[in-house]
Image (cartoon, rainbow, N blue to C red; front, top):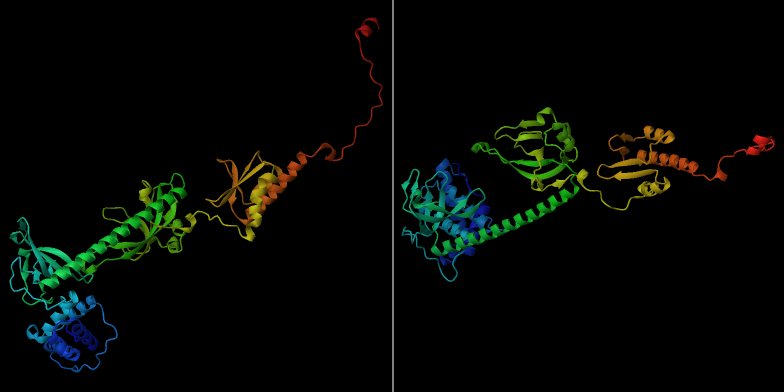
Length: 488
């Protein structure tokens, strides 16, 4: 283990905290500068014992503290000081050890108001062991402070044998998140520590620390429950919204996940978490087709690059413990975006996600000036065409559909073929994407229809000039009667 000397600012901070917090008059009488020098000297002695050199200035000049850290930061600062000082053989009998322990105690739990704390840690029985430091001899144990004891039914533990049933309630330092947690250890798996990095605690301080931990645990649990309820509420609202915009016969969705790598090669752990999810497209089948995933990836700027990703981005891992079929430029757990298909069994299969812009329903806002002609054409087209043509705008597919009362012919048919329209044989209508070209073509077609209908419905007096039939010069024929036939 390497040893280094803390900087002057840390010693001044610890000494100032101790003088301002302790109820001991003897410690206050020492003063900040004297306490800081005592702590620093022990740290230098530890460094010299390790490296056999003395190159540090003993004097602490600047004792001004701009801002005092919170109690938790003070604890870890003091604990680090202890770790960097224990190489000195006389440290555990020194004044610096006593001062460091007092800093650790006060940072864990303030002194009891109205008097000094009475330590009761000499008797290591179940009823009087609170405040003692114990070590868990197991591979995942560590050190902890006893806060209580209880009796349970005896049993057996691998490597320990028969258990007496005595269980210690322990406050243990969780190094992963720099916090304290309450846990339980069997007495047979623990041993009392004579010298330790944690300080011996008074019964009052231990009870106060336990209450703090329980209170913090209740707050965290309540916050988690509220977060879960809010997430469930948002998820249900999102799924209900998806049901209103989801096309019929949808069997799967294509989503994009922002993955964050949490792998640890030292412990041989490989894993990741999903930080964000985007719903890219609907699908009417459940087959994993990478061309479909690439096309869906283009629906959002965050995943657009995956549309043209190399072939190595197509991962096929449909085996036990595999990642399935997914499109990603990198390893399964590497940080980045991945695109995959999710089969829909019911609406509960839809995850809470952001909707891609192309899946958002069209906003009902007033059309801009440039679209005024287009809107006017939509409203007036059926009246102008006198029911001969029906124009429908498919907002879901961003298309326009023309349905004729009878088969178009002549100039109308020619205009349809020249323009962007195509014939849908199954639906028996003409269709095209909404565009300025399509709107211009519709205007031409409406002109042809209007001209055709005007010609067909014109009154007789307004028709094209027609010459009157010439008057006949022949004499009217004599009618033939039965009398003329019989008697001439």
